[in-house]
Image (cartoon, rainbow over all chains, first blue to last red; front, side, top):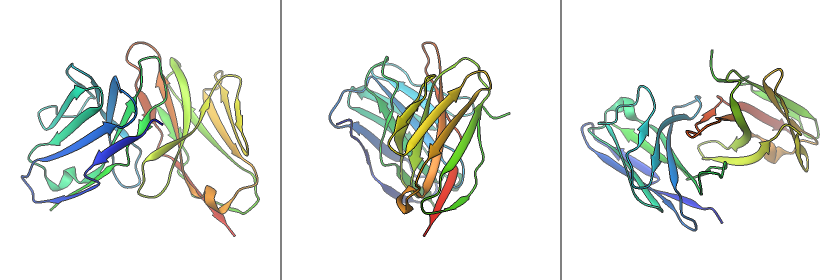
Length: 116
Length: 111
């Protein structure tokens, strides 16, 4: 149980394109989903916390107008990188938590974004 | 100072060896701690939680020292398949339970 999927797994796009990444909890309902970014040889950096039906909470330094997060249902959260630039190229990983009391996060397989 | 600090390694150990990693955290309000394993170009996978009383799962033992604010992971009888990056994480207390990851310690088990 507790499987999280992400789609797409790979994206290569031109600079200026907007890219949408989906994160789904397949066999459980996730009240909270998290979006992380990981650059090569660096740790996972939390970008934002997303609660179903409410606005996402962004970490300091993350532009909310550039990284649009929508958590419309208990099984789906989306991250849209608007007007992507080469410096946005990274490994984007989502995770989901079942309930607010549950401390374990279940990670999706990640999405590799390459902006040319 | 980073909130969670780890030695990035790499730690190169022979098969069968015992290896230990430490991780320090700066936020004394941190409530929960975890070790994750991340293989190259993959997502992190939960290895084990770390509690004040310690936690053992087969060849893996995790310990928490709140007084010194560090967490440790001990791997006994290392296998080639243990080669990966081990991420230490802390979660703060309160309503906004943010998880902070360390940079990870790379382990390479050599035949």
